Length: 113
Image (tube, rainbow, N blue to C red; front, side, top):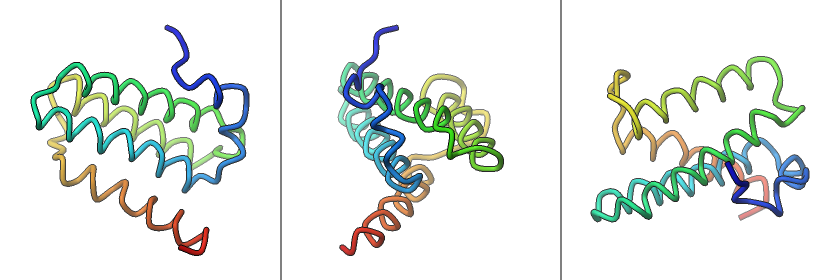
């Protein structure tokens, strides 16, 4: 599997706070949902692959150990279930939008926006 975010793969991703990392994951999840709802499955899958790569970078970040890593792994599991499998956890678009919105909001507050 080739790396999509080559500029982030070399460790630059680790300079972002956890809130910024998850806000960026959420941006691609939002795109995944929007493209899928517009019937553009190819772009939806591409956005989801980008989101998965970013969440994997976030899981690999040394600062995100312990409970953070466990939640990140669970989040990845449920994202995969919702977008690629049978949605056994009964997730919805709105739940994912709400989940990631809080990280966008927190990252914006931290930057003084």
